Length: 371
Image 1 (cartoon, rainbow, N blue to C red):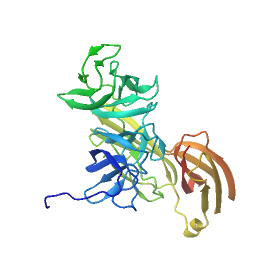
Image 2 (tube, rainbow, N blue to C red):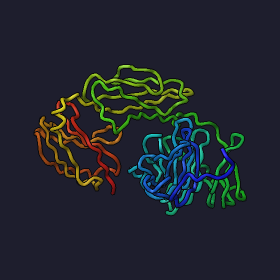
Image 3 (cartoon, helix red, strand yellow):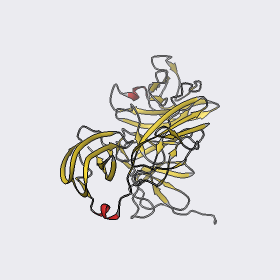
Image 4 (cartoon, rainbow, N blue to C red):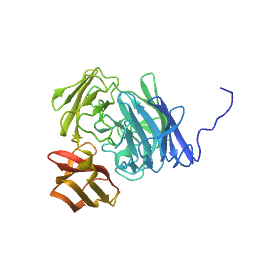
């Protein structure tokens, strides 16, 4: 390699942060495409050494801060965005390598200035833009389940974190720390120590299967778990044990709904997570060719018109959320028709609408609710 610069980006308005995640370089900031005008990537993208890639559908508005939870393999991202991957996300979101999730309990209009992991907890520093909300103390920590106080925080903005000698160092525009608790004068820099998180909330296992893959009887399906440093992974399908490895493959022998579960153990902590998987029957080609299924508008505000026709009788129309929970079911018992679907009581995000007969999913489409 010759000494000198090499351009790798094109059309990027602003880059605010770079970080390594899953052995790739991730950038965030303000941009709509990278590399060339034909490759869109909304405000966040990854570089694998050869080419750029998207992180899902990206972020609606800019991002300014990132940090990595290596224990759960999560990438936390903060910024001015309110949607991440089509999901509502109030300025803070989590990417698990496959999909975006908003952060539980993180509310209020916040300018995020700093983030880091310390003692298996996420620390966020920022300035509140409304009174009485989460970031009034300028700093909070998330233990995997709840947002907790950091002894009253600081009296003014906090701009950066760094972990040194098993201690969290903080710096910013403050002159007092432990507001209302310790009330210690501290000019622009201070340090915080606490023991390791021992209540196991930090362990947050995830199950992922390719949501764009149509799973049929006989298909070999790869499953993904995010806890690569765990001591053990105990997988099961409908209560029957399968391979005890981090990312197993499984072949479904029957159609219908199946519950995949994993029990993860790490450093004495145990957590369980499950996900419902739909498996379609193997139909004859002429049966598939007769199925027509459409949803309009999509994206929508929750009011959607579904049209369907099939050579087979359709018993039900079923709508599930991104983790497989049924949020709506409509009896059809016909081969064709039109349904006015009302999902206006559901949160914005991604849903799946399926035509079902004899407990078998015949066809499905992705719905996006954006309000």
